[in-house]
Amino acid sequence: MATVLEKFEKLGCDNAPGQEGVRKNGVLDLRGEKLTGVPVDFSHGDVDAFLPTPGCIDVFNEGFAAGGTQAYTQYAGKKEIRAYLAEKIGEFTGAPVDAEKGIILTPGTQGALFLAMGALVGTGDKVAIVEPDYFANRKLVEFFEGQLVPVQMDYMGKTECAGLDLQQLEAVFKDGVKLFLFSNPNNPTGVIYSYDEIVTIATLAKKYQVTLLVDELYSRQVFENRPYTHLRAQKEIPDNLITIIGPSKTESLSGFRLGVAFGTPEIITRMEKLQAIVSLRCAGYCQAVFKTWFNEPEGFMSERILAHQAIRDELVSVFSAVNGVSVRPSEGGSYLFVTLPELEVSIGDFVKIVRELAAVTVTPGTEFGPQFVNSFRINFSQDHQKAVAAVKRLLTVMERYRK
Image 1 (tube, one colour):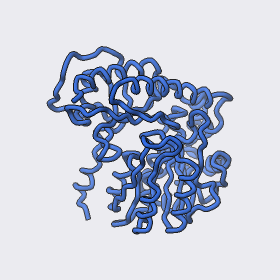
Image 2 (cartoon, helix red, strand yellow):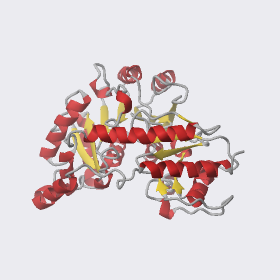
Image 3 (cartoon, one colour):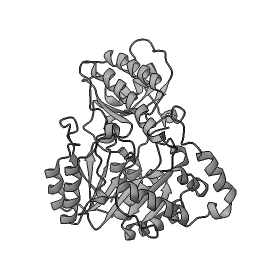
């Protein structure tokens, strides 16, 4: 059993969004002059470049005006809002949601993830995660003292699917994995799991009695009408399944910290009990903003997706034009996971150097798996031209350190 200090040493947040102000660069091998340009922080989306859903502040003010009835909701969230979301999410995912016992509102999808992991992981439990996948996944497994079981995804070697190693997945399920956690679209790569992959995951989980925790945060932002399969809507699903989603980067509502988890009532009940001692509830006034979700003005979502796709396409073109740099175009969400040629500095130092010399902030690949020592992630939900200029500065700096 890890000590408290050991547990928190693994929760380093130097590379987390918004933490750039507390990072300590130390002594860096700085080569050449600083490049001028508008600073760009690719560790998170820019809500100034993509404004929040129209009307969200009006709905928030209505919630504020409602006073105590909105401020002090049930721990799972206000009943009327849960009913609204259950209907909308049921339509979106293709399977009904239990508005009474099968849904909980949380402080962002990050809050939903923490509550779900706290409700599902016990000391020594084997938990399978994908590499690469969202950086908090592995940290939460370790924090709740589970046993981390990585499953590899050959995202660069495939085009028609995400590239998850399904044989390895079955092997770890056979070996006693109790929970499988993954994001779809994948964060950091933006790849989408194929229908066959999703059906196989569901079938294997049912066969081996594995609980599934599916993070679908970016499932509303899918490019080029690529097919997207909601696992919860399949004919054969495991007995224990929780899905997470929320209005975030796509709608630029991240600042309201809104998340939703839905699925197996027994697990949702545990999550509610945990929320009662962590944050009490999703912020009451902010809950009102859920009324704008799945209720955007006509054309809003399609225009936003096309705008993100245009940024993605140009950035992929810029990266692909440089010898030794590779990236798979994201199929959903707003992330690119870029692989660089071998450098004369570590990826950790390179990230600090680029921030110092080019005013560009990116997330090192090692946050998503220890083997990604030549990769970094960017969130391209940014001002289009500023993002392109920032990437060009980053690549200029990279050439100074190419081995």
